[in-house]
Length: 446
Figure (spheres, rainbow, N blue to C red):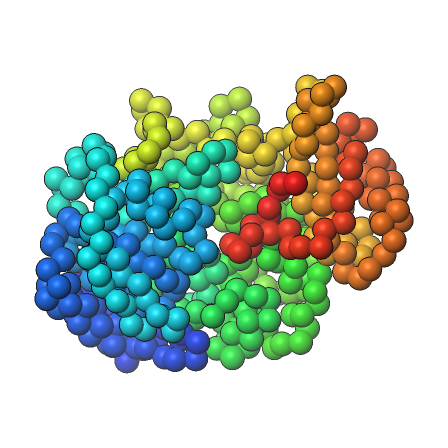
């Protein structure tokens, strides 16, 4: 990754990070990478050894990743809100060292931690003498999968320099989208703005204080942002672009975001940990149609399911069989509609609800419910039923208290007016806890 460090050297005085108000220039990043490289040498961290980084984004965490890449180590980023417990993750990947960052993200404690995991794929990869990256999937269809990437290949997508922006890496350091964002920003000599937590208030405050231009977020976060009206309490006029991905965006939320941020470009993104993040272009008419692909990516549709072939694909799963076919195509499990070169993502096949043989997309119902007065958020999922296989259940978070019976009546009436009868929620539950995970993604479960 020497090309990236060489690029940093051309802008030593430019701000690379604003971390909780603390600034670090690209020159300071280079110095910190060198210091960490010396530390690894002093501690005896050998090439090819596996190092888990425990923490979230900070300038120092990024610098340690670069130092480990220079040393051809295998990096396992683990946030304290990871989708998998640390012990379970390291039992799959194995480990030689753990670098745990303090609360401020400044000082890592590097300790020897030998956990042996006999993994043929990783053993074969180590023969390449290249840096690796191991990430864990959310495990929505079972136990989390350990995904091995060549870290040089991940970074190579950003060799072509693009316009510098001030941006917040919204997704966490242990998420492929988070890694993708931070490489995208720094490779273009932009400014990475990190926050202590990803609450609506903290994100808005950071945008106001540092004049953030790009906000990559999830539809769940944007739903809560516009429902709370908190964006009105801050000066967010610096925003030029809001990108959204990782889950299906409700049309009602997209409409509200467009109204709340007139003049701000709204761009849908698409990517998977297994294949990388594709370049995308929203159709520009306020719809959910998107064109995806770009250099290094190919797409095709088989039985309404999106398949992707990528030059930046993972090396493989450490604990599961590959989902790539013999020609290198990956089944995304995402059902789509097509309109020429444009796609509309309907939802993951694994999220579908089967009501008496009829297929129901949760996002379609959530979209309608989110348009109902006094509804702040909604999550729709299937519940087992002895007669129908599954029934539709809607969990709803309200903006202000309201009698349950009235809410249920309004929800069912709104859905019945616009949906087939089998899609109308059989159960409506008022939630007293958030309907999203710590990663600001929809939590569709009982």
